[in-house]
Image 1 (tube, rainbow, N blue to C red):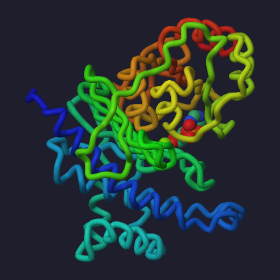
Image 2: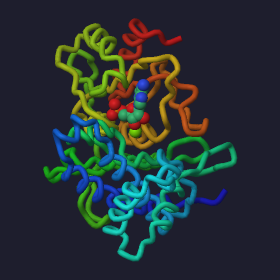
Image 3: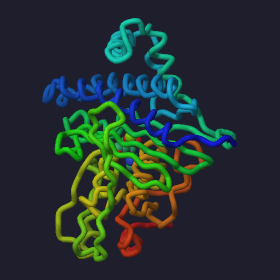
Image 4: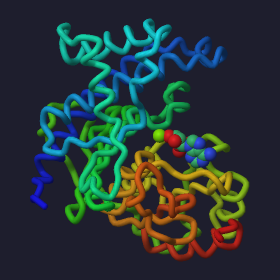
Length: 334
Ligand code: AMP
Ligand code: MG
């Protein structure tokens, strides 16, 4: 297997995620706030999701040596009759970044670059969530553009673009990144790609009593009743920090919380690789620990889903075993 220059791949991925963030930010800013929410109209997020994937895939096609991309979306529904209105809006957003000469077919083909189904022969691939936390996106709150690189079933690089989390300069918008063995960094989301990044580190507390924990806003994505019991057992008195998307990993990686609990709401649900690849490596490279509810490492060697894992526990590290012990008392981890 040939060697890959991770520094070059990192910079390619940063540019790709920044391009996608531009579109997501402009769509979120123009959401018809309350009216959109009341009608449960998901069309704005659908358009931004597709445009974001088209931009990340087209950028990687130009500047990354790795051509396999496992994205959450594909263009099949946009190719169907009746989807013209959505398709035209997606194309318009892609043209705003890539230029007026982009044809509709080109835009759809870019989205479909993310249609790879990884198997044992796919030695390296990107995995992309073009908008992670779509519910937060629609509420005008947190969401992330998440891009991870998997090599032989291991995450080796990850980028989290978080347009609504503060950056190192205090301005809204940050980009977190990590390369295996090289630590984790934060930089402003806005920028040209080569500006200074600064190292980030998890909190160093060793007692759970002083810990803050975060979890999903959506009770359907994580059992909030069980997390309250676990927090009480750990002596945690602060209310949970409820945040959408992989911004939760970003918060733990920066030491603003020490625990992220994602407790299964059903036995059948399997986590998707693009929901965790980037966030996991950012926390690990910031010095933290990430496992499933049984304490098993996340296993990225099974295609699009974490087939061998259930739930997610991320911590600053020193308190991981204590958290797992408490989890085992309240969650059926068999
Ligand atoms: P969050 O913003 O942390 O609530 O997570 C958003 C992600 O939850 C989405 O990208 C979905 O892929 C994922 N998701 C959907 N259904 C479930 C479920 N039942 N349990 C856990 N995660 C889910
Ligand atoms: Mg997601």
